[in-house]
Length: 280
Image (cartoon, rainbow, N blue to C red):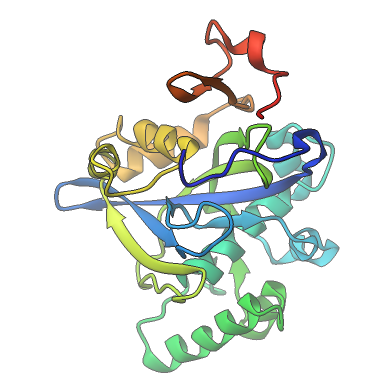
């Protein structure tokens, strides 16, 4: 947990922001691999940690006109999956936008229903410019979709889990985790600003490196990697995610003791006793 400062003066006053993250999984030569990004060491939130592409849900992600540019999901059914009254599709759109901004991977299809390809240098350069504009707030992702005649592949992204940042963190997120295959004819590219490295890695290797102190991870990422490591192929993971029913949120709590901070989850014996404890 050393990537996150869990000491703030007013834990109850920290707002919880909606967020989305996407775990892109593929089959490597030695098993399932997942794309991970290393955050800038100077970032004020989990600096130096390896994370999945993701971030906060923006107002534009839930714009009324977005639904017409999404494939296979409506706001009604997306909201039902998340157990909310409305605005659910924005989480899928945010996951796609963040993947594009942070990793340069765009989960979108052309008018033939095929994933967008960046293997043509001219197309790659054009979408690289789109990415810079979207990341810089100069252009909305739906403007890119309209200009290029593409639609967001929301039907290929599946809801997997939900984690809420513990009370006491300087920033708190209610994050929906999604699973998807990466676009086949695109390569991840980091921006060397917010993200300083990208790597395809087997979950078991990421966890082993974390244990050796070589690969900084926060707790939800550790648990997500453990979950991915139970599967033999990427297709198994995606197929499993596509059939998950109701997903309960996981809100860890932190107990301070002589040995340092201890993370507790719902169901742990001491969880209820410390859920309202303030971190000094």
